[in-house]
Each structure stands twice: as structure tokens, then as C-alpha cells.
Length: 470
Image 1 (cartoon, rainbow, N blue to C red):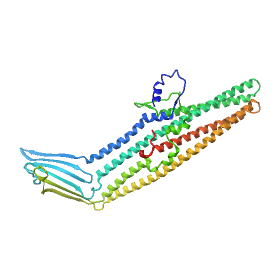
Image 2: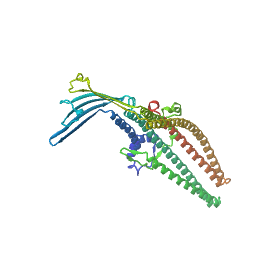
Image 3: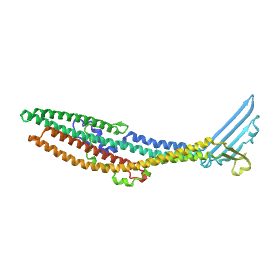
Image 4: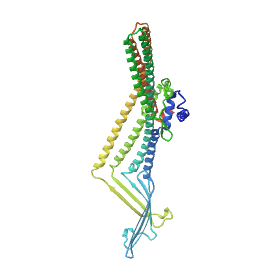
């Protein structure tokens, strides 16, 4: 990382003096993306949002104090002067403790509001005996907020790993276009040399004019192919620059002399700290996508329990001890109290029954989603394993094909020099050689992308159950 930082800081000052290419390795590149990419930092906000929602939900259980003061005075007469202060402590199971002080006076005071001159103290409890006892809105909100926080952390990791995967695949595309550009550049040099040789032979009277025309056409085609490959390389380099940032959200643009590591294929497992055998240790139940869906399912289960609880009648009981003074608990007498019972029962419960059925449907739908996601992840792992094996085998076959085509091209060139071959046959063999080398590059690119998919799959395992990739 320090090497890369130093490189970017001094690259501008070296512009006119150094002509050597600088290799940006995959490991350095990944480290840079992890450290400075703004979306990676933005992903941390998802977790922060979950913690804020959890704090908000816990606020429903905060103790509350209220003061209600009401006074009326008209034509020098004090109609009433009422003070009512209350301190409440909500608890988990629908139980609420309450302390109260009340002082009222006035000539037009409602008789039920009459209290001793020094006021009236109260201490009591209110409880929901049916609906709201085992599950209520406050309990459900807090449970769902806790689940959301866990889900947000899983989503944060998934988002970061998705950015890393995209960044790695973009590096592989940059590498592919760089190697393609080199191939076309090499064969352009071959075409130029061949054209010059044929032209000299024509001037010496050894070759017909048609050979110079064919050599010239071949040279122009090579120039066209190189120009197209140059454009693709530039576009892939600019795309790669999207993932490179400096501290302070300053974007970077790659200099022309910065090139990818052409040995990436041989060191890919070391660069990503992976190996194919790790696929056997992956459990889809520990995949962060499944974990995230499971947290969401648990939230829907809490909602279902809340809707089920709402089918019960509402039975609220309140009891308060009363005393004109308070020096201790002994001042409260069971003969002095204020109590109440509130019963509320909808006759048809159509709204509550409909909400409960909807909650069950949402839970069933999530079960289907989780099952489908598990099958999808299992198939994806099998596809990754097969792709790694197949592309590796294809690469070996293509390497041998390239060697064979190179021998054919050289044989045709020797025959042409001896006057027994033709330029057409050389060009035909060379086109096949180019196609095979491009297929080899494309196959290696697919191999690297499958490794990136393995990297993402391993990184998306729950932290406690996966090998952490630094």
C-alpha cells in the first residue's frame, strides 16, 4: 500500500523523465479499493442507520414525566387551579409503573377533583391482561429494530463485497484488453516487416505485384485491429480508475505507464487468499444473503405474533394507592385507592383477522424466497467449481494449439522465402494463430472471473464461520 501511495504522489513529477512501465498488482489494487473507495465507506452508513433505528425503538421504553397545570380566574374569582404531575416507567410485558401527585383548588372545582390541602400522592401500576401482555407494539418495534441492525450489518458486508467483486472483475478486463493490445501490436510489427520484405522482393523482381497488394491489405487490417484494441484498453483503464481514490474522496486517473500484472493468472490464489478446496467448506445457511433474509423473516414472524395478539380482547387494569403525604411505603393504605378496568372487544375482528392473514402470507412468501435463494447459491457454487475446472483445462488445450499454429506460420514463412508457398497461406495461418491466442486470453479471463466469484462467495460467509480475507 505504501508503495502505491508513493507511486501516485510522485508520478506527475516523473512524467518527462521515466519511460519504464509501472505494474499495478491485483493485491495493491484491492487494498486501495478497500481503503479509499467512497461507496465502501458509504456502506458503513447502512449499519449506522440500523443502530439509530434501534435507539429510536428503545425510546418507547424511556421513563416519562408529564405536568398538567390548568387554572381559571374570572372577575376576581378563582374558578379552579389544578396541578397534576405523573411519572411513568414502561416495562417489557405491557406493564407500566406510575407515580402521581395531584393538587386542586377552586370554588367551581369538580367534586371528584377534591383533594386534601397538601395534595394527594399516588403510586400504582397499569397492566394489559390480554392484548398487549405477551406482545405489543413497543415490544415488536424493539425486536424488529434489533433484527434490522443485524440485517443492516449483513447488507453492509454484502455491499462491500459486491464493490470488491466489481473492482476485481474490472481489473481482469483491463488485463485482458492489455494483453489483446499487445498481441495486435506484435502482429502489426510482423505485418510491417513482411510488407517491407515483399516490397523489396518485388523491386528485385522476385515477387509479383499482387503479393505487395496482399501484404499491404494485411498491414492495414492489423492497424485497424490494433486501433480497436487500443480503444477497448483505454475504456477499460478509465473504468478501472472509477475504483481508485485518494483520501478525501479525490479520484485518481491511471497514467499511461501503469500496466496490469501479466502474471496474475499464476498468482491469483495468493492475491485473493483463496483456494478451490474452500468451496467444500461453504455452508449456504451461513451465507450473508441467507442470513439477511432470515433476519427479515424473523421480523415478519414478530409482526405475525403481534397481529395474532391483536385478536385478543383488550383488558386493561389499573390500580393506584393514594396518600395525602409520603414519607415511605407505609403511608400507602390499601383502603385508599383508585382503580379501573377497561374492556374492549370488537364484535367481528375483521380488521384484525385480515391483518393476521396478510402477516402469514408475507411469512410464507419469505420462506419461498429463502428456499429459492439457497438453491440458487448451491447451484452457483457448483457452477463456479465446474467453470474453474473447465477453463483451466481449456487453457491448457489452447496453449498447445497456439504452439502448433506458431509452428505452422513459421513453416509457411520458410516455404514462402524458398518460393514454394504463398502470402495468402501465411496470412490465413496467422489469422488462425491470432484467433487462438485471443481465445486463450478470453479463457484465462473467464478463469480469473470464476476465481473472483469464489472470492466473493467466501467473503459472503458469516464472519464467525469463514476465513477472513484481509
